Length: 415
Image 1 (cartoon, helix red, strand yellow):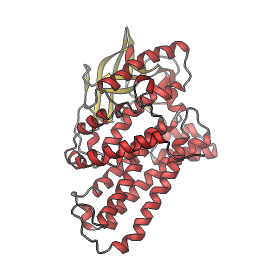
Image 2 (cartoon, rainbow, N blue to C red):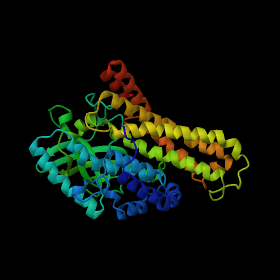
Image 3 (tube, helix red, strand yellow):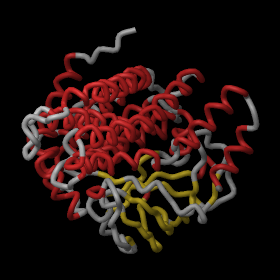
């Protein structure tokens, strides 16, 4: 077992850390107050080649695998968690098109066609600076949940009707990060038909300015404000066949075969914990601008600060083990460990970010310090479907006890 980052991973982590500290962090307070999308952060990501982080090297990208992406995302989140969370959507799309798809079974003709289509999409990212949102969430009262998806089920209220040359897509998505800000959206839909359910799952590239696409609604949330996650409405949107991000049917199959997809969110919240701990130390030692110098109760705060670090390092150790095991068709115990890591991070990030404010005292509650933003952003961890704490812990006990997984899962998904 070797859990130390490689030299290449360390190089990419250092680049991400530099961007986070020097560029993202000074802008984060503005984007949080305005609930504005961090286009300036994305300009830096583009300039440093990081939009191509998870594009395979043979297409001109940096060739990061899932593990490397997670290590980089942890660093980016320490500057602006909203930027890192939206970047997650883009990088997951690249990973799904690239190395994860390479590990999935496909017919030779489907693989050849996918190779041709993704080469063009990767080129737009590397050469043109394109990036993607992922409108996966749909209202609970709409669509169809299929218990054949073993990661918690998902709803497909977005329907695709096959027509000559492509599909006509209609539906409504919500919590669409990068709403109206990304050039493209990797959009799940279900093709109308009578074939088996998973075979009809589609994953389509939808341009933000395609006729019939709109992003209605206000965006004024408690945390992760710079993600700009408004609704997305698709009203009879024509999507050509060549806009398939994955071959038909592969999206549903991939959800089952690579459950670690959802562990990527935890990288953001792990980085947020680290930022809160670093911020608390800076405040207590007078290195944070505006903090009292010296902090009169610094010695008394020591035990709580130590407990924060213990929580962070415990979560990080389990998380690093889990991402090192990510692969197509993992063993059952590997999936259980991934669930454990995900839930551990979800719980710890709330505790650590709240403690950062408590140990620093009343002034740390003011918005002129970043600590209160960290605590607000941390609350989003519990809401990231499909591996919310409730669904993930339910799956842990079902897998451990071998009881009624499909029936209980379906009930929970519709609750």
